[in-house]
Length: 82
Image (cartoon, rainbow, N blue to C red; front, top):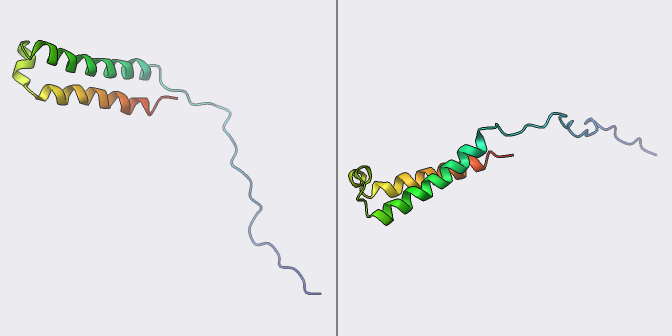
């Protein structure tokens, strides 16, 4: 009877799980919520006041970009939350 082949690879061992759980930084959730709410409030105020506020009137329709930038920043931070 022929001799069986010897296994060349080492037997698979799964990676060890680390005992320390990495939590989110304490500042992440408050900044995330602030960005989401501030972006929403900025867009709402822009529409309600029809840009009669001096800062908003100089920005014009760029107010929408600014509001959505804050919202997108909040969504991006939410992907880091554990």
